[in-house]
Length: 599
Image (cartoon, rainbow, N blue to C red; front, side):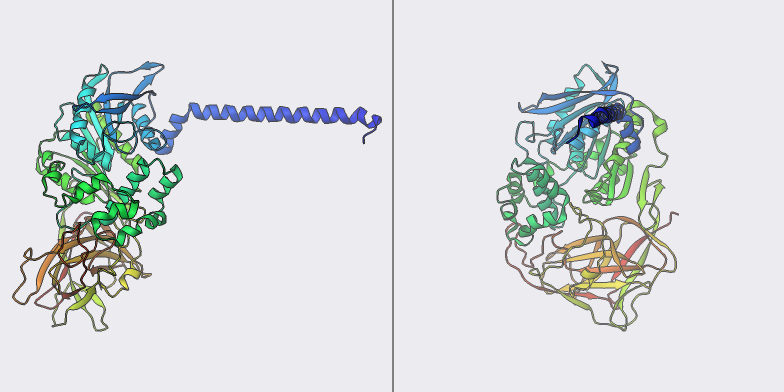
């Protein structure tokens, strides 16, 4: 208890201290609020600095959920981002159209909306749309089928708007990029430039009858996570980014037969478009021909800039599209970075696209880079500017052989001595696993393959350590003399960079499916097969070795070849296949490398 004499000095002192603390707290809170307000006011400039964008020139006004009618009466939900200058909405600017099945706004589409703001604040009207049957749009989502007509109808709507200045560009990644090509196939006169990334004019089944099991399962999982209201945001993020979570959900599908039941095995429900796909397994089916726009490239006049990555799932298709445009007399631009699909640098793509659109939609030709091709040379870890893809190269063959200690060797000399073939057994009940490479998950990319190479169903052939750097730029090929105990069989080849510490890092790979009557054997029953790997640009450093893997598959990246020849969707029986690779003078199996002539 405090007596009266002490109160005379104590309480005023306590009160003064308390008032000082309150003042400091108030001043601190005010300072924090002022700093926050300042940061908010400068947010666009700070974002531009952080992402290395040009300075924003405009504010942005957004009109949400405009309903655009399609020819069949279905309406698609569309947002309009307009450049705004001091409260005045500017009209005389080009338009960027982006159509997505992954949500144009809200929590799911927060990244998409962020990108739309970046275009608009640099002087572009942005039309952002949920594709048919997704999120706020009407109709039913059937992948690929409606994108051409819906894209064209949306472009026609844009052309009728009072703010339209006559020019549209389209941008998008992956499926969003596919919608670019679908709309472009209708040859709309207002489409003046396109910038599709990690995508292609066709995303359906390819020739070769090799079923991309992991890709199909992951895409079904991603779409189901987005569209199922019972999946919360945290779980949705885990299903996209957490490899272990993906494996836990998808693993029942890796081994399930028949493949036609994958949706039920993994998601415990029927996925309507997957069922339709099972009815049309062949790439030349009219169903797929109707959504393959590669042949339309010959007549698409809008300047195109392709962007992709060395480990992207659609790299080969992107380069096929680039080649076709070149052959048609166009001058497309091409950028290939060190990315895989899910770590693709989206902001890099936006920066490149802004320059591309500034050139072709605004006439700012000084922003056009001098060389149309820019690629990242892995191993050397640097960018190269090239006049064309692929650059000049000379083919060099490394022949498969086996040295005295039994190890496989790659050598520039053809085999000189008779030797027994290398053999292995492929068992679809214990399939050769996949490690890294192009995947629709964060398990993609380059990994140490030593554990994989220790398996008895994987053959390896390795060079001596290099005495100088070796740049491999282009398409690697494998020429093998083989025999198999079954007429139905797969051969998988992979090129690895073996580091001095022993790590064997995958660079590129490819697969071929053998079926009766497709390749004629020699009189002795031996087949000569040649197949391409996915294109690459890699420097093998001095002291490193090149290694070729040969195996019977890469599961679950590719579905197992069951060895029976049954239809892929309904096959259930499995047979073990004995395989042999011949490496003698009469059967000189070889790895064929494009050695770059460009410094």
